[in-house]
Every structure is written in structure tokens, then in C-alpha cells.
Length: 266
Ligand code: FPP
Image (cartoon, rainbow, N blue to C red; front, side, top):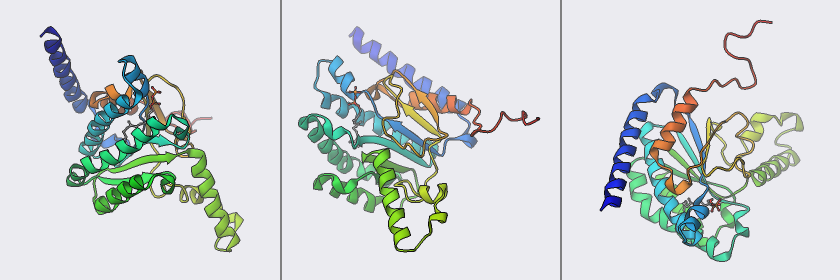
């Protein structure tokens, strides 16, 4: 009973916190693109004496809440790291559980995502995923392609280095076919050959679970991104954490290699 009351109080407090933070956010200066490394699922589960996939399953709840809030706030793009090119090294049961979870997630959420005008996309070497995952991704993409709400990028079998390899190969082929010359290769051309072509670079990267690494995520696109780190594990991450990250982001001064505003005297 006491436990129940306590969790109710915590929940109420979280809701109040979220309301207060919602009010504090400047709607004119929202990040255009938020990227999230959904980390800490495994540790979260193991601390509860449960197998790691239990943590991934709990992580889906966090994802659901965060997608909803980003869409409500009219954030244009959200990219989440769901499976990296390195995650294949994990035990087969965990990899299978993650693939099953992806398929389940798509078919369970698609109506809600579609009704809320979310546009689902995927980035990474999607063609190397198991067929049932490729089918689920293609289905979500096609079903939501005409939506004009949040662009929700699932990074699946994604690696920043393999993304650069794929972009380099595509550009090299165009050079060999004499469609472009070597002199045409500049930053903009490279950006336009990445999986994220046409999207703004992330303004804000969120990494929960206390680790301070990029982990091969969007390595080109994160050049001037603001990082926000927290000890909260992804399955515990909720809207108030996201809103706190956005508030902090809005209090930062971004210089993009230049000087502080008003400090351009010699
Ligand atoms: C990293 O935590 C997380 C992952 C490798 C998977 C993230 C996947 C989800 C949150 C599931 C929801 C997403 C979809 C689209 C199905 P970790 O396992 O490395 O945690 P650890 O650092 O504690 O071991």
C-alpha cells in the first residue's frame, strides 16, 4: 500500500515537473533535430535480476513517450539509435529479441504514429536486416510517407563509419561515371550522400545511462551538436528528462567555431 502511494506520488510529481518544464520551453528556439542513444537497457534489467531483453522491452515505453512529446512540441526530426552495426556481436538471443521487438513495435505503434502524422523512416544498412524487419520497416515507411508531422528516424544496423563508407562509394561511382568531378566534392556533397540527406544535423544529442561516448553514432552530423548526458537509464527516461534536456539546450550559447556574440572585436 505504502509502495503504491509512493509510486503514485512520484508519478504525480513527474507530471507536475513535465507541466512546469513545458511552460519553461521557448517554442521559438526548439532544436530542429534531436538524436538519442537509447542506452542502459541491459544494465537496467540486470539490476532487477532480469535478462537484458527485459530492459529493451522496457525501453520501448520510453521511446513511445518521447516520440509523442517530440511530435506535440513540433520538433521536426527525432533520430534514435536502436541497433548498431556492432550490436551483432551480442549473444544471438539478445539480437533475436531486439529484432522481434522492432517488428512488434512497428505493427503495434503504426496506427497511432500514422494518426499523429508521424513520418517513420529508417537509416542504416537496412538491406542487411532479417526479412521480417525489412518488411516491417518498409511497411512503416510507406504507410507514413505522406505525413507532415515529426520525422522519426530509426537507426537500425546503423554505424557512422559504414555510413561514410557507403557515401564515399556512391560518390566514387559518380566520379567514375563522370557525373561529377573530384573538385565537386565538398562538405555539402558528402552530407547529401549520407543516410540523413536532406535533414538538418542534430542540434541536441541525448545519451542516458552515464556513458560519455558517441559509439559510432552520426559521427559526421554531430560536428557541432550540443551534448546532454544523464545517469538516468533509458527505460527510466521520460518526458521530463527530455524537457529538461531541451531547457538546458536553450540556455547554451552555440558558437559553431566563432566567438561569443558581441565579442568580435580584435
Ligand atoms: C543500448 O542499451 C540499447 C540497444 C542496443 C537497443 C535499443 C533498443 C530499444 C530501446 C528497443 C526499442 C527500439 C525499437 C525500435 C524496437 P544496452 O543494451 O547497450 O545497455 P547497457 O549499456 O546497459 O548494456
